[in-house]
Structure formats: structure tokens, C-alpha cells
Length: 210
Image (cartoon, rainbow, N blue to C red):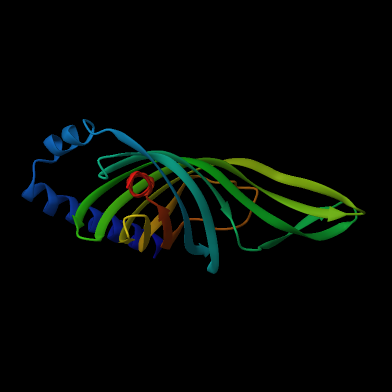
């Protein structure tokens, strides 16, 4: 079922790009994008997904540079914001440990539709991080089962811009674990639905100049 959702999502993205490519020359459009002066952008997002069938929220803080409000390149930090417990065997028996899931992710985001206050874009990020278990015992904190992770997250987001300063949006995506931590008995590959809040620094700058 997860594989079905993933390929369905890829089909949706592919159809969108195909429709866009029919209306404009995509390579020429990208060349024009990078001739624009880059401006700073930052955003918070909340990606709701599932871990082994249970609802899980991943939060992210992202900063980047925007070229002509069409292409954004940047870096984000993401972490699991939902409490999950897993049993760990110690010398003194089983204890409940918290799951930690965190990663840095370079990302690229292309705006394929923009009209009035609305825009639609396709963000793609590749995350590099770690997951591990942590628990407390006798006043000390222990970290166990730590290992590296690599993941791929494509998505599609629709956004409404308020006063040219803030962007509020939502969308859908998919988290595909390219390298998982096999020491943690949880399934992190999952569809996602996304909430976003973004500060449009270029709009703030223009407002201050006026």
C-alpha cells in the first residue's frame, strides 16, 4: 500500500511537470530564474505522517535563497515532534525509551504556478541524520540504538500569500527511507500531509523601503 501511494504521488508530480512543460520551455525558464537577484527566505513547516500506522508530526525550520520567487535553494533541520515509545532491554530488564528522529535536509523548491496571491510549488529534499532511543534511569540519561538515516521527500504545496509578507499553505508528500535504522523496530516510510508558514523577506524589505 505504501508503494502504491508513492508511485501515485510520483505520477501526480510527473503530470504537473508535463502540463507545465507544454506551456513553457522549462529549460529556458530555469535559465531565466537564475539571472534574478537572490533574496533570503525562511519558513516553518509541519509534516504530518505515520510511523508504523500511528500519526506522527515532523517539524522543520528552513532557510534558503529565492531566485525571482520561482526557485528556492536552502537547508532545513527537521525533527520528530510526537512522543513514541519502544521497549529496550537492559541488564535490569525492559524499559520504555523515547524514539528520536532528526535530520538535516538540503532542499530545492520550484514554483510552477503563480497568480495573484496564489502559488503552487514542488519541494524536494534529501535528509541526512540519525534516529535513536533515549531513556532515563537513576537520574542519568542513556542513548542507545543510534544509527544514521537517509531519506527522500518529494511533495506538492499550494500557498496563499498575505500582504506579500506571509505565506500560508498546505499540501501532500511522501517520505521514503533510503537508509533506515534497523535497530529501531518502526516503519518511517509514509505518505505526508503538510502545513506551512513562510516569511517573505523580499516583501518585508519592500514594505520597509516604502
